[in-house]
Image (cartoon, rainbow, N blue to C red):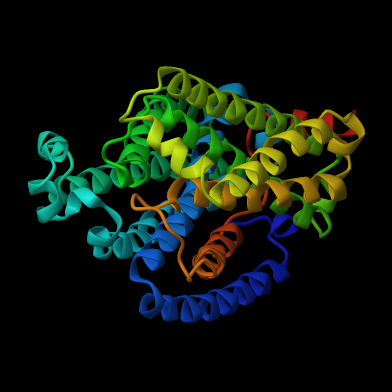
Length: 394
């Protein structure tokens, strides 16, 4: 039975309902884009899909990291991680269906005529083909669903019984679970995003998207935590020390993302190979160079220098602004990765990059709010909860 003193505040449900209304309106506006520019429509949808699934998958990964480290930052925010990760299935599978319908518009290798005229695509066809692409994605979702289901079930059993064996099982699963997540997400990144340009490849690309998911997840958890900290009961729980820890984690993930991004650029640029360098040239020699500058500034430079401040990380309101800036920039980063077309040129449907994330986001946030309301906001029988709450005063 839920402890009434730690139930989610009632306005969480109201915020979720408002998000749903905004999402439905956003999707209705986005549907118009199908008749404006079909390819742009599906590219914009892919940006939104990868972004929202990135938050959910990043929360799953960070939750497993917390089970391995027992950090107090994850104990007081565990329900946010759990609620977000529960959206992976079935919502993520439903979100994936339009990608399947738009494969011929998105992926060159999905068109038989293009494959017949390109020897490289013919060599890659055993891997890059529609049935195998769909089967791989369903396999990824199955793995992520199993990880989420077991962790959520054992967390609930721990809440009910207080038996320490459930805490140990979650830790035991999280070790290999993090590795399994990293492997499956690497291949998902190759499939969903990197194969948009089937001639280009980067062995570090999967790690780049994984780091981006970590940023998205941590920024999202900070935003939700700040909102909850202004309401009972979490106003009595979440204190500056917890936000300080969350801010440090966000800083570390921002630096990790910058390292992977810089490493990929240096390796490919110095190699100067004809099958690799055009990917960057399409972005540097077009209007997308300004998108790249915006990402570098807003997702690394500005957050990096601001998050060095201890006082800022302990100030929930200021940390909220930084997290909001970072999470919006994640969408811009995905536009930079996904947006440029192989043939170049610009689309009249750039506005779809805005309404697609809003539309999917409204639906996703509604599901998230329902999951967040289904459990107490604190794992009341976690053996480390008392120390996590005591740490808030220091």
